[in-house]
Length: 293
Figure 1 (spheres, rainbow, N blue to C red):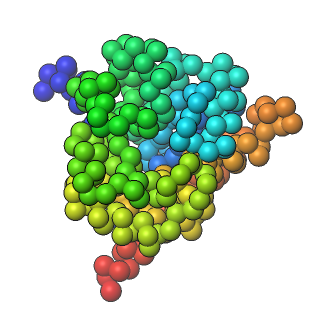
Figure 2 (figure 1 turned 90 degrees about the horizontal axis):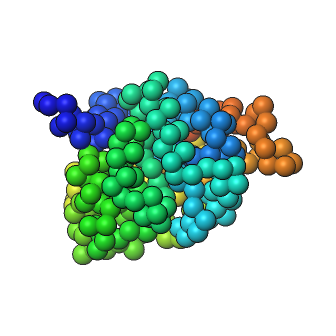
């Protein structure tokens, strides 16, 4: 394989390899969402660097934006903190590049909105993202009808383009959603903004089973997972449990009165990561017992 082809395939290969490894271990992924630059770039970088050893299998790195329509107040405020601290899209990708220098295995998925990417310029953004070691994109405000805008160029550049499916995505719409999806499918456990509800494993399990009839891609479930018990429940029916608002809440609660990081900020997020990872691992034990019975 030529160096050029290997470079193009790196992003997709890293995500695929992670899910293959986890299937071999008989467990789901813990997918952790953190906001780049929250509450400041140095603290955010320390958190990101510590996530894999704390149990994160895939890292979703939020791109701060002033109008995050799909996010609830928790993540909205996190983005505002990051913007106030000076985060930019360029600094976000530099943060990913710094992480990639010491971790070549953990997939990084940028999550956010199209406006900052459009302002940056799609070709320049994709080139910088690839050079920074980013593996995939979740862009919540670009529907399949706009695939030529970013999705198809991203795939051509070797990045996975991960689509959202929701409880209102019927079978007819699901085909369009999945057509150019790669890496994994992100199933939103309830209709609404982030942080506004809780995920029910029984209901989610039925939805995941329906989606599996349409795709062989791994299915990760997000929105409404805050506790190890919830993570365990979702991990028992899906290929990944995505947690975001709970981490942002833990970070927020560690800040001082002026909103600055304290000595406990990094550990607050990483300790919660360990607890949630234990919940996901607990789902592995349940599955193994079921196979043995």
